[in-house]
Length: 617
Image (cartoon, rainbow, N blue to C red; front, top):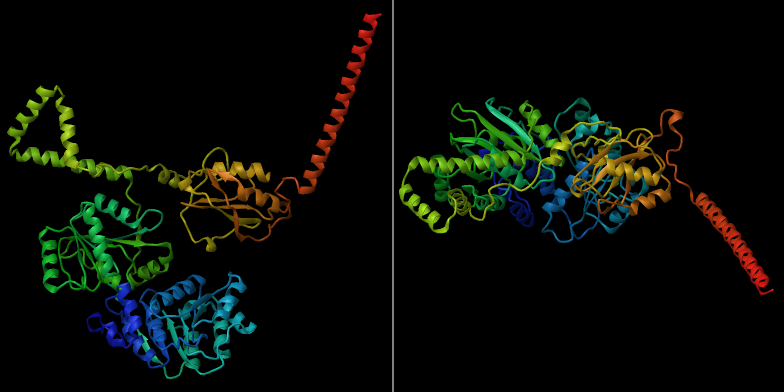
């Protein structure tokens, strides 16, 4: 039952609770996505649901909003259980529930997944929760231990069922389905419906409503699609650099919320861009005026929400920038369709964070096109463009030739009166024209250049390779190594050679024993041999590098070495017992030296007295 965008009802018409409507309004959602419009009504009625929808279609809100509406907040027992294939998705869904329930007093949700301490989860479940989001294996463990009681369960949600099948968790899912003690509502969401998923749906879902959302996959071939991975630099600073360097005409910048459209327009205007907002709160007359200004070239940058930009047709739009990731792949296709109009070419740029990589893959799958990664324009390039534009202003002023004679006389008069060279006068006038806004960006590209250089991985006075930031928990650790985190990174001026020298000096390991070093903005990751002694660990924890304490902590342990030749102990620092023996030995030598010195002194004293007696005689 696909729903078209123009026929979708408003959130208010779907029947969700008033407190949830306030949260939706606070977030800035303007209208439900296709999956939300189709799934919310039957879930509110308590019916089972089989939903086929891709990642990024807004299905979390599709099941969270109706299930939150039906909660009994006075009963602090698990009433909703969501099974997710990965801990990242479990955390993400849990955060979404918390966000949608921001106006529900006393609401509690807890994510449970492998890798987290059981006792943390025991305490959270014991305090009382309304919604549990977990991975199948850990949910099964808690059910076996009796720490997760499901006697009050209202609804079970299977999120991304085909992904759980692919990862080998489907048997655990079936175990959970078989051991839930009472009748309940079941909602199953899956991007595809392979045979095993269809059998589960037939067995455990009762007269389900079937919802299938077919995402449009048509994208214009004349649109160049790129993405920038959001990390380190503030999004607004990155956007400013891109706007300054790209050859643009009209630009539409898409954001998720009405409030953000207004805030971003004000910030860009403060930075010298002709920018205005376009959102659902604006009166129709004002919206028409804004669009006409964009069409005529009086306005260059439009910051819009999805609803406000529907049907917008402006041929001069050269760039569409997704400042906020769209809710679903269909919205992305609608957005980038605003450029490359009337047979022209266009550019689409997507800002995406590491946590949203799954949505990037979903967009590529839906559009059947690869989105290329883009590098942020360098300081040097931005400054070069700024100087070029400033020079062009001078050229344009000279070309007009209006009132130049008058200003020439004034400058010549000033030069004679004050004996100041004409070049210095011109520089002073240029400074007045520029005002308080600096002409050039302050900063250096040296770090980013070093990050791109590929050098020898073994320490030989050269830098090690610096890789892009990634999910720490998904990083593989080589056999025979442990992965450690230290609280020093690129912003502190850390170099791999510096940390290698410190660890070698304290731990007694050689540079060949130290594995990969990943430098991040505010921390770093380093592979060290298995089994670091506690005394070395404690000493490293308090050691300062680049003015910062290392605060070293173990993130992940690798497997044992494959070959027996690699199993020998790497750390060579003395143990505490050896230290004491060495100290006692040194103290013994000191006592012996003291006795010898005393004997020598006594002998000299006696010889002196003997000589004095001989002299008296």
